[in-house]
Image 1 (spheres, rainbow, N blue to C red):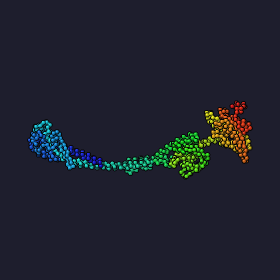
Image 2 (cartoon, one colour; image 1 turned 180 degrees about the vertical axis):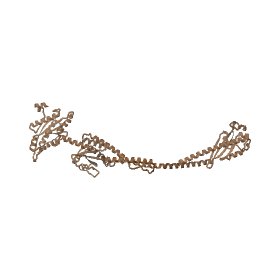
Image 3 (cartoon, helix red, strand yellow; image 1 turned 135 degrees about the vertical axis):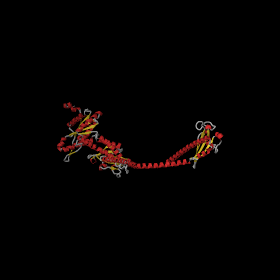
Image 4 (cartoon, one colour; image 1 turned 45 degrees about the vertical axis):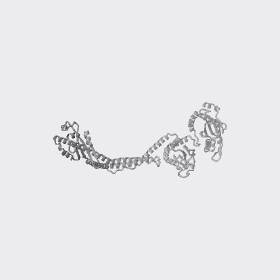
Length: 596
């Protein structure tokens, strides 16, 4: 409405100004007409009849008053004239003094008048020649013609015209609005539907479709294109989710936006693929476990947890990765290991007795193969942290699933390696593994100046055991000796079944006096160990031990092993059940001297 009012005021003033300008032009024409008429009367000598002429002019439409003003010089020459043709007001005075046209508007709420006073200036040149009748100079003001116009009609016409134009403008605008609205209505309907659908898509809902009930072909095309795109997008995203679920565990509260969810799935697939490609080239299970532990720590944000490997029926569980805040031990009564079911501390109060001191914990078993499984035990400090950890379980499951083939493969490789390098009867390393061990140990020993004590051990009169009691009893004697060897050496030491009833022990960084003490301890322990025969009776056997020191006796560890073997035979020659330290005089024979 403010715009219409402003427009109406502008139009009214414009029309008013135009009317006033027309009135001014009309006044000038009347003034010129009066001037020419008075000049004609003067030339014809009928100046005394000018009143009829002036009265006739003053009756023109719009003229409210008209009079002639004589200057002082004309009054002196011809007198004041009819109707007192003298100055009536200040406008007449200014016009006579300046020789310029003067105008004045007089407006009120009831009337509007325009006053114009036009000077009559003497001219010597032209027709008529004013100097023929007037005693005046060139350019002198001889008089003035004053006219008062009634411009009420002009003002009224301006308002009426303005209103008419305004009404016409409003009509045209309404018509244009109607036409535009009618033509834009289908577009607005389509736009509103597109806006609604796009807002829903922004929120992650791609199931909504654009609706359009009009008949416009272009609008129908736009609707078809957008709906086709949304349908393809929705079907593709749903297909991605369904396909990924076949080989990837998804979080139950994954993102509601299918597009963002697909992006997160692609990133997770990429991370898992990189993880899988990396562990394919790892050397053993332990390295794979370290990588899983690193992901749990740095990528999934777990702070207090252990990863445990256990065999069939939870036999010999071992911590393979420890990121616990305090020293954790493996409890054989662990509920998760025993039941093969996930255990959460919020399932039931003190659900797992082995974790009764842990306020918030969970234990998740993962079956890797028929040979072994993994157990992930996680401890948190708050119920919120426990709930957040539960949300991470699908991701953990994905990484464990990705690692499963490699763990199985590396476990089989490890089993094959152990079976090929371990004596089946005793569980000790065999002669084949000795070659690998010596190759690694020798370079390290030479580089770091490491001393090895070497024991070559043989059961005295072992052939008599096999001949008297049978090979199965002989195997019992060998197993009994292997058990004593395991109990009496350190973790850093290594025992081998060298062949038959003969055993080799490499004592890592062991002083010479300690070497003989360990050898004697083993000998005495075996001597006191009863061996059961098939009829229930028991008997005892003794050992002979040969000792050498690497690199004191030789810088070749193979020579030192041979030296220990020579010392063993000296022990047997000395009556058995004793220990002999290798000495150079044991190489007195010419054949041995040539060999060494």
